[in-house]
Image (cartoon, rainbow, N blue to C red; front, top):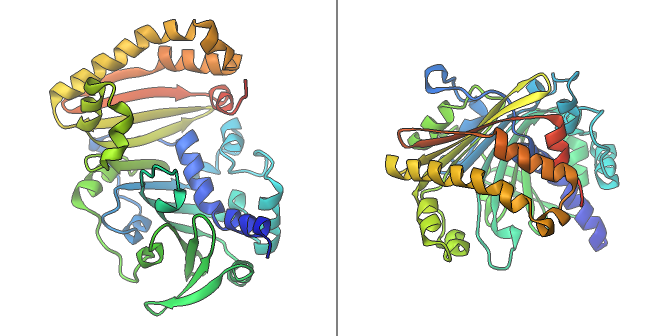
Length: 338
């Protein structure tokens, strides 16, 4: 098999992870539950490794109900969304799986690695996806370039690439995928494991959302802060952030988005608010620079102006919260080119 063919296979097998992560990173959705209205965490999260530093969840079936909203197409969860590339079309034809109709929900665990070389194979990702799968077709497709091994009495399919991918069928409606160093050893055990108590508490605060992400940031590798050495004050503030939680609520054509950072002290939380308010003041000055404007499209400039003017900043005790209503036009500006 040629190198381009292997690359296409890797892209296809990573489709579920890529779609989930991309939708999460760019188009976060659904409502953020407050501590007073916290919901139970989805059961699928119990299949993730209990010590994962970052966890995300998407209920694609719930988001897919936004059929009449332009956001549903932008999210890529309807047939009316952006046209898939040829490689993905080939994958759908060969496996019968199309995330726009067949993915129901997924949970993801991340172990980000800071690599000087930018080698993404050092990052570890575990995803558990529920949906409708043609098991025989997917296995046959994987074996075109990969192979199957037995690990802890489970059949694991391994596909080479950068990064390599391992996966197994937990049931006829559930698949587990892993990428990164020794990732196959992190595929789900038959018995669910409780999450780290601190992580569980953070998840419970946003568990009513159809899409959310929670990350511990109190034990990041030192390399993560290297780029901030020229600004010791900002570097110290970055060190003060203990966790991040992201969630939102779809409301018609809007997505009410909330990002909350938990700091190690109330003083540092207040310093974050002061810094963010300063950026709000000086941001328009930077955007007025002709050199800066020449590197962006008018829609991107409008997006940044909206972010500066419409984002609300607040803090309570050690938490800093940013809130913003995203529109389809704002989301479309993300992909526009200068």
